[in-house]
Amino acid sequence: MSFNREQPEAGATGTKPVSELFSTDLVPMADRLDAWLFRAKQICGDCRFQFPHSPAFTGCIERRKVAGLELTQFSSTPLSFAKFPVVSASSPDRSCIVITQLEGVRRYYQEGTRTVLQPGDTTLLDSGRPWSSDCAGRCSRLYLRVPIWLMQDRLRLSTLPALPRIS
Image (cartoon, rainbow, N blue to C red):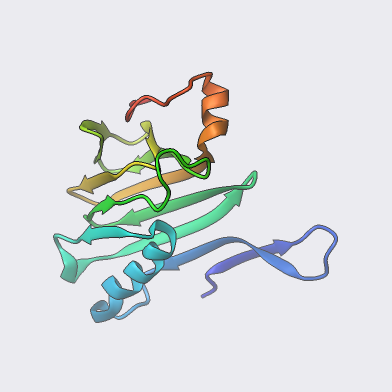
């Protein structure tokens, strides 16, 4: 089974990965959490994860670039996490994370605000501020990282609202 879907790179004889897919499906049960955490921390950085049903954990992570932006799909049995930013809230390198819920019901928290996403709902997070999330059942969601300046420019806002729910 290949974890990289490849397509020819324009003007090159080689190929480049269009997406990277990791799944715990073929990983022995005893190694699933460690394998998934290793992949997740490459994307999330400093996160604190909790797995309420750890012996039965399954999950997959798919990453790809869309118009030069990083798009990641996380799908898993229940888990919660707390994310601590690696860039400061005043850094020009911080991102807006556009989250779209695909499956399950997931709660997000940032700066005292909570939002609950159902399939099809979307919200925005500021990657320069701590945030957390949890889901009681199987969940799947998309994270699109957009430079904060681009999002503010497109929305014509100087600051982003905390966790708006967009249905």
